[in-house]
Length: 187
Image (cartoon, rainbow, N blue to C red; front, side):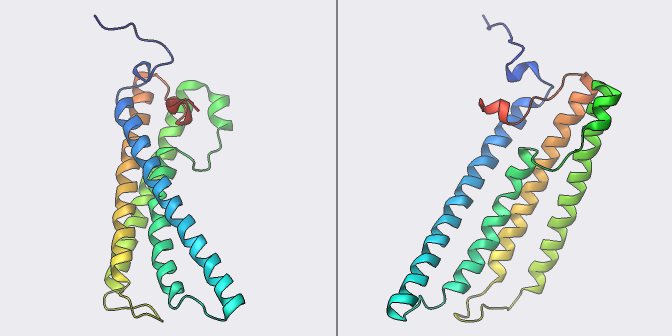
């Protein structure tokens, strides 16, 4: 016997909501990992400043390593930004036109976001080619790999946004609104 569906449960939303919920969870985990990496980089920079001030002995090449880390960490936050739908939205028109029009306008906005991240991913892939053979200034570390990871993360973000567009499409077609991303995780 299956339990009755609660209007507040993810099953009450549009089709594809379970996929969307899993996507949000994975994207959030990735962004938390990125935040931890950025925190470690910040601590390393603080240590570098302290060593520089107290002993005139900085951490050699830290700037090179931090530049590569930040490139990847920022790109690792793209999927969560799209999954959590934290983009800037203006909903005045949708509120004035009613729920059905609001869902269609939201779908349009999410589709524009999808096109945007596709363009960003494409340009990052192009940039990867430009980085072939380039190295960091101090340590001479190759930089192309970091841009490959960033491009891959932008492609993942595009896939995440495709899921967001799909769920908004099903919401607009079925008339069952999509709950806020934070509500899916009990926030």
